[in-house]
View 1 (cartoon, rainbow, N blue to C red):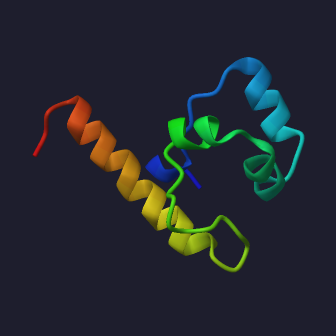
View 2: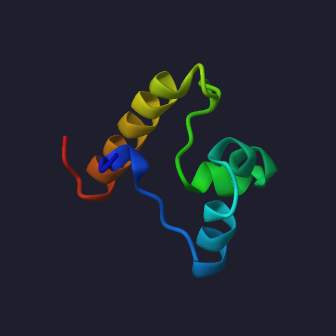
View 3: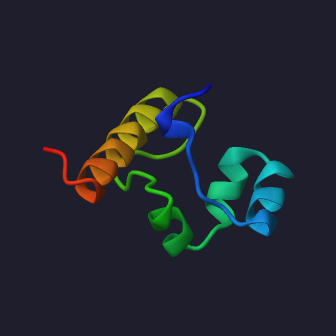
Length: 73
């Protein structure tokens, strides 16, 4: 899906590792600071059964962060 919730700033090597594995496995294998820096919600688990809730929560975090950066209320 082309949506703000799918945005992620990754280095070339991180992107290669991410693309080589399932998104759920990738998220579980990464250190907490990588997950935090990519604005993964802390209160919603990333799983098949919970994906839409995770997606919506992450979208809100990204929008909130962009509003903070650009000083938009």
